[in-house]
Length: 501
Image (tube, rainbow, N blue to C red; front, side, top):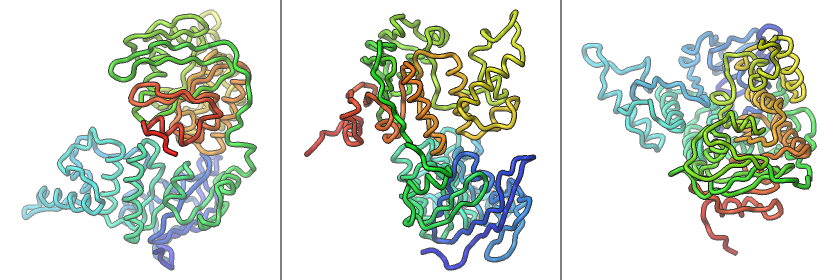
């Protein structure tokens, strides 16, 4: 049950970075016993607002009140002292310390001689995990914990500090369905115990499953705050992007052409085996299945990132050399990987250098890559993909997640590929950018590019694919045409269940 008065209030807060106004006169109320969704496109101001709550950034103007009293959150320590805890998408534990040591960091119980009372520290951790209904050994090193368990340790830290405001910033992006359900059970428990929850996610089904209220930001400004029951998903989308989307899945009807990709008997022990399929020019084919079914490993093996133990891969009738991304690129294959930060971009390099890396030789003159040729090529593709940035010379790490994804796409599309492989193309990006990425994929297919897509989002699979190939435990178990692919048929095949009437 939500409290009658706000636990925390942000009043007309603003924050700018140079000429960029990240947050402009935003007001935001949080009530105890309530889960409050904070939504908006990438760059809408969500992260900046959270960092002001966390004491990472100080507002340029406006005020923050706790129980009606103005407070200064000049440092993260100030935020923790005020009872504000932030759980990020990528937890920040000390990997070489134990779980119990991470939970008690800065507040370790002391014994008679002012030394750390390890027995009390472990007992505290056990009590916290019992309260959360999870089983994690307090003496286990943090290194090697799954992302889901690391987040639970972060929640235990928040409980140990009696946090009254708990912010969850994209906590489910790297979790499986079972892990998400466990996290939501813990979140509901925190809410029911009186904490004020702030939940940030691009997944509307998660927002509707957890939250009672939603605040929408756009371009750093407050658009609306309403009970979730009063808003449809369509209305939330319209307010987030400031316009009506023509369609989230703008799939064009294209008559497939000649076979571009032919995979026969592809095998990598013990990950996957007996993989046979084709992708034709103008066709979008989706690899679906549960996490761990082998989808990403198959496309990485096709591109040559991972080895293969058997089978053949042909592009345009030309057999690809196993384990050679260079050979795949020479044949006209492009791979947009799932982890854009680790595998798709060089974060310390500029936007223009990332975009032009695969074409650096073609852009060179007498063996030298000139800044002007690099800049022209990068500007052409970032403009075509409607990428938002300050300067092309800025580090790519300064961009939002959605714009980083566009840079990865620009990098490969500048090569005019015959086959585009996209692994989780819209993970972690906002709904407006998702629509743009989908439109781009559809346009490429209409131009004759063959597209092979891996996606865990069923609406995306069903909305964009001409055919759906379902994998289970390293095997290809079903091939469904667009007309017969439904959420039920895909999930039945992915889980091995029998369809019952």
